[in-house]
Length: 67
Image 1: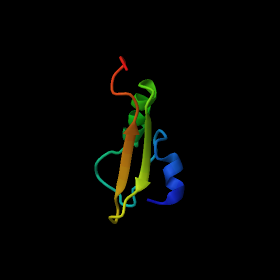
Image 2: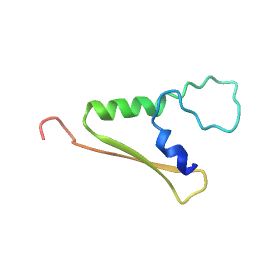
Image 3: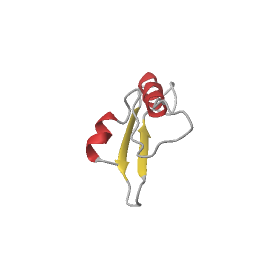
């Protein structure tokens, strides 16, 4: 992933696909992940992995509301 793209990865309606597809793509998946994490007061981050074309996602936060 391009380093500048990481800053916008969790934005709504964002897509970094190079190829066109017949399947619709709205760019909402990671935005929804961010909304869920925000609701639960958790953090989500992404960084490039060592394997080509791979990204690692990390979610950190409380395991339950009782903690």
